Each structure stands twice: as structure tokens, then as C-alpha cells.
Length: 466
Image: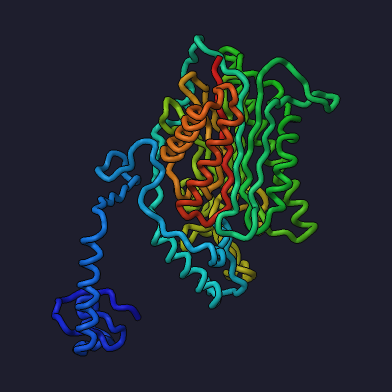
């Protein structure tokens, strides 16, 4: 038991159990106070004198702790800075700290409450200690709805080819379960099975954050773009139709994305039944068609657009604590409980006395335990569309390993600073892939510096306006 309370200060008194001075000891419970010995008093006096001498000899430094959680607050980090405080980093000789899967925790028992093993408790306490040292992540909510994203385009500039940069890191984990897919020149599949070119500029990028294994993420990364390319609604979407045809085109494209997600999840579940798999993955897809960007996602991977240097969130994290997601899960007969975070709970009750499992996202691919026999975790994506404007410079797509420790605006600022630094070094503005790679690398490095425990995958898309 650690003494943390403070009552009153009386010199020369310490706790007989924790040996702390009375000012750090509680007067209640099992802690009884005993006088300090003369030797202890002398040692403390000598230490205080040494500390004073060191402070006098050291140069004066002013330490500022910045809090990025409240924009505009006196302690907020200035634009372009990436740190919101200091994070203690372990020595390189220490073993990497293992953590729970951010999406999946399980208990083999049938108890209604989670019973953590001794080893798990040690890991949990270690994570709590690290979390206490980490600065709280910034949270920037986007006040705009999807409908408000679509604004009249400016004819003064046209959007050319996109540039892509990807960076990844395992974080504190001994494995990598993230996957990604980039298709710079993306075309619908014609009747004969070959790409059909109609002159419309299209691109595809996707991030897959696996949990409880990488099989679902691997399968989706290799197949989803092919499934979508074969959808009729995707082939008919050019981004150039005028009203009212534009509305019908948008509805067809939205239906194509939903259909592709459903088909991909069916493939993954078929494999899970054959192999008794229990893995799953979060999905984030971005498709550029002309001057429009379509997003579809299931899970907590996030897409953020930089518009005039300000962050514009394009997706909403699918967490069980989100009210509309909680209502959907409960309405389907599922349970949402708080176990370190809000989770969808499967098993461990009278109806299903098997293994009790908690999932920290409310939509995903795979995760057969949460979809059969009843569908608690959805596979249908949220679909959004935004018209890209000349003031739009880059798009950040990343798994939650980045967003757990960085806010939207922080990420945008770090990406812009990295691009600016490369331009000052002489990198040509036309070398978009190099600039995108520099931005993605800077974001991954910032997440690691902030102490993220999860796998991190960052895709940066640079927009070039002609």
C-alpha cells in the first residue's frame, strides 16, 4: 500500500511502513507514524544542501508544459509543434512492453465479469503506468456534416494525379497486424475482366487494422479493391455528372461501396468457418474519382483532410460508446460494457455460456463470434463524399495507433512541417511521392515518440493542383 494522502506537516516524523515523511503519509489505516532517527535527519539535510548546490550551478531553464487538448488555451502548443508535454522513454536495453490488443480482450472463463490472470494483471498495471506518463491525446471534433463538405468547385485549378506515401511501425508490440493497399491508377473492371479506361482519374487507398491475427487484414488488402472494381455502381461513377444525374450517381457509388464491403466480409467469414478463425480487422477506404473523394470505413481507423491548413475529419470512429452504435448493438440483443474502454461483449451469459470476449469496435470485417448466430458487430460501412478544393493539400489515413496519441490538427501540422522541411532541403514540389513519404514518416515517428503501444500505419495523399 502506498502513502499518497497529505494531512499536516510535522518535521521529524515518518511512516514506519513506507518510510515516507509525514507530509506524504496518511494518518488513518495501517500506517502509523514514527519519529525519524537523527541519522535520517542528517542524511536528508545533506541531500537538501546538495540539491541546492546543483540548482545554483545549473543554467536557468524555463520549462513549459503544453496542453493541446483545449484549442486556444494558454498552454496550447503552437501551430506546427508536435509535443504536448514530455514522455519518459524506456532504455533501449529494456524488453518491449506487450499490451492487450486494442480491439480484442478475452477471458476463457464463463464468469459475468472479466477475471484477469496474474500475468495479465502485471501487463495491465504496466500499461496504466505508461498511460499515466503519456499526455492525454488531443480531441478535435469536426462541426461539419458530410452534406456540408460538398461545396461548389472552383474552375481556376484542376486536380492532377495524386501522390502517396506510406509508413508503418509495430509500436510496442512484437507483431505487425496492419496492412494497406495503394492503387494510384484505379479503373473499373470491364465485362471481359480487364481494366476499363474511360479517361476519369481514379485512385484507391486503404488501411486495414487487424486484431487477434492478421489474416482478415491480409485477405482484405489483397481483395477488396478488386471486388469494388467489379461493382456496376463504381464503373458508372465519373464525378462529372450534373444534377439531377449526380444524385443518382452518388447513390449508385454508395451502394457499390456497401456491396463490396458485404461481399468481402462474407469471404472472410467463410474462411473463418473453415479454419475456426477468430480474427478481424478495421477497414478504411478512400477512392478518388475526378474532383471527389469517397470514404468508406468500418472501425476506428480515421481519415483527415487538410483544408487551408485546418483539419477536417472525414470519418467517425465506430466505438461501442458512440450512442448510435450502442443503440444498434443493444437493439440487436447485444451488450455494451465498460472494461478499460467501451466494448461489445460476446458470450459469458445464460444464453451463451461459452468464452466471454470483448471487442472495442462496433464495426469490422471478420470477428465471427460477434456476427454468428446474431449480428452484434456490423460490416456495413459509413460512406462519405467530399468535393476536393484548391485549398486542400493533403489527406491523412491512419490506424488508431496514430490517433490514440495525436489529435487531428496535430497530425495535419506535423505533416505540413515535414513537407515544408523537405522543400527547404531542395526537394522539388513536383516530387509528390517523396513529400508524402516524408509526411507519413514524420507522423509515425511522432506517434512512437508520444508512446503509442499499438501498430501504426499512416498513408499520406498529396494533392497536386494544376
